[in-house]
Image (cartoon, rainbow, N blue to C red; front, side, top):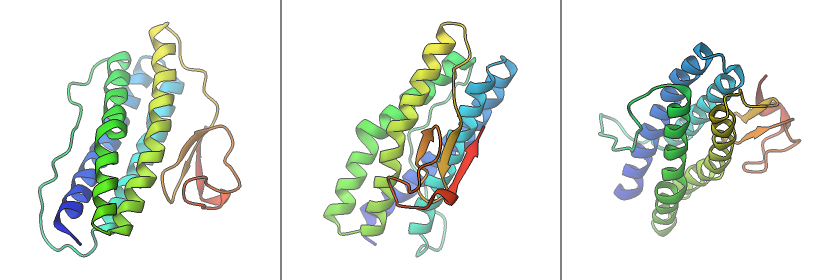
Length: 182
């Protein structure tokens, strides 16, 4: 694998791993503040980030040893409104800066497995941002978010509110590959 794409995968793995843990902690805070649906949303998206990290990690199976991951990570957790803002900022960075560059470099370097992993994550991060913005608006108005079941594709991390589709629109996985957060 070309070194630049390899480093991007390492960085993406680090960023998604940190997002997974942050969102679990943010979910605990939302639960303490009685925003049970926001807590459920954080936990569902934490799971999607876990799937993304796993996809990036699998693409790095050729490595043997320790490597430094440079990833943008939000620090300074607070109340649920602050945590939602941190989550929105992180998703925005991935959508506007990180994944578009990583995809183009992987494409240029002919690294198809990395490109697919980046594209799957990129497609999903847009949905995460929308869901976090919906939650932010509700919490900002002093309410819990009105949220149906959230489904996560176990193959690519695709996230949606509502019922799982027959096939994942990102990776084509069957409905049975979705995990529900109700």
